[in-house]
Image 1: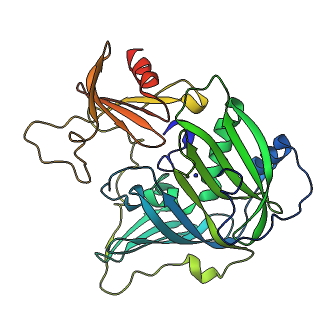
Image 2 (image 1 turned 180 degrees about the vertical axis):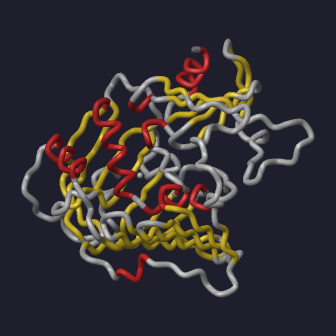
Length: 338
């Protein structure tokens, strides 16, 4: 999604950052929006553990391998030593995923099929469905970094989030931006300057389209045993072939291209070619049939199907291209026509 709001892409106004039942807004020293942004971008979370809650109202269907994409609420438990070691436990529809980075090896355990994947830390996937739902601090920091230049940035009071006093940082699209989003709100811990919660609001709705953040968080040293992993008895362990020659940087699938970025800020559009599917071939693992989604559209760029959600839109063309962004249809078609 445009400008890093994929948090699966991709959360009343002033009260959105305050959990139900919270007391009066905490009294904190005044801070300017620019100083707050700068301190967030310079912050280092350090060791911590917490429970992350994702409230999703994006309107997406249930996608293969991405249970967090569908509407609803999901939770995860995370731990980190503040450097290279981390652990996440993510419930799935049929069990639980456990992800452990021990500093040299990345482990992924799926309780549903008792499978373990073991890989050198350097081969750890940069982006996973779980990451979007378990790292609200990183998601919020990325959003701030990419949107600040095209936003009106303000501080809208204070709130208590995850039991900690926080500033409410608000990024509103500049008048020149063409986007489906109304604003992005970030609850920033007053002491550590670590983002505690990210809230995305779409035009025309007072309810969050997406909200991800800590429901509880504790800063401080963590038990070292959390960052070790031993495959459970009876599990199947898959390990990459360590004798093989180093792989070249992985390119896009056959027929696909790396996305081209059109525009910047809130009205960024990503345009790419979809992977080819040979006639008569079995669907690729994890593939999803998009032919029944959306509505037919056409223009000078060709024809295809328009798929819209609360915070994003995409056009999948009949000739195998896709354009996606947190933008209205007109911005997508303009990007396809370039």
